[in-house]
Length: 366
Image 1 (tube, one colour):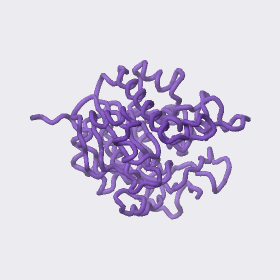
Image 2 (cartoon, helix red, strand yellow):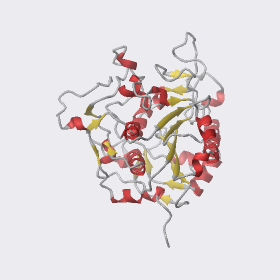
Image 3 (tube, one colour):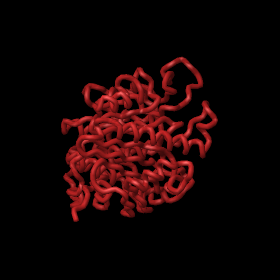
Image 4 (spheres, helix red, strand yellow):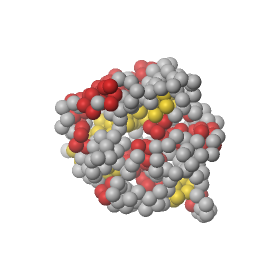
């Protein structure tokens, strides 16, 4: 289904967009955050990770940090969940299709760049959190990245195996070659569907040096994740997506281990361990109030309900929390917005969406 730029008949009032101050009193329990590192993993249900011997680091982290035991993805497929996480809406997109970069090729199989305002797509109860239908609702075509830049804060999307040439027009890559090269059989390690920001018109336009496709970089190189961690100069919000052999998704055309279930979980566990260790070794982790979030976008389609693992580790506050509060990707977005002192956006403003105060709060005084 092709994503329209703006729904017809949107009222003038709607154009202001559904972004409001937080009405959840628990928002006051979220301290002001300096840095958040969000590591997005792929396509595994809660029960496939917690208690799995193939994921020893993740299970140890779930015990020593804070674990959400009642956290749900918002529908299917992957791209929808990524958009919900950073923008609080599916923006009418219910597929994993490539972007229609710069409106270049009108096609029903491409997603036109998101901008303006419109009405998003309903999420039916069968795949929605807690089996409750999420009706179609007005949206403003923004993400937390736009909010951060407006507040003079910074963001980056760190995408493993993104080619050194950058993200513009790149839909897939093995780190060296991409769909832009005259090479056949390129393994889909980097997948654009895991980089939600580039689906937005202003990011594709790249007119703002702080809010364009140049904000998407790889893990390696002078401006990559590990260089930034090494220098301690990291953005306020780091969206970190391992490649499809390291995020537990899997990708054909390469090593057989990249399509083996047990090996994928082991590789993902090792990848998270490397990322978390590198973050905690960075100077950026040692100053201010910072959080690492490790989460999965959705289950594997075969496991119902759509419950996924979400772990929060901070350099402050309480640890060892096991929270059974009902949370979803909307809850995480609302929580991060509260921590960065931003208004809630789109479905993050829904009355039944609560901030994850027990996972992010300061240590309680006795």
